[in-house]
Length: 95
Image (cartoon, rainbow, N blue to C red):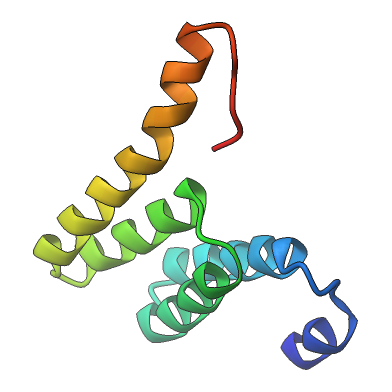
């Protein structure tokens, strides 16, 4: 399925990122940490956003890499902060 995705997804990466992120969540829920990490890192390589990074941070916590997860949480907050400030000013920005 991933080979088909690689051949058919639009070049922008957004669609690939969503599909890979969802796949990572499925693997994570099944306790398959290695495939989950591979999928989420691939997803992040196509599009870094708070949703993908949140999945990665959760994976890191579940695999006892809490220090790394804390660093990802800082990155997530930095991505969300401009959107929060913009919405307070009446100018919402995408995350």
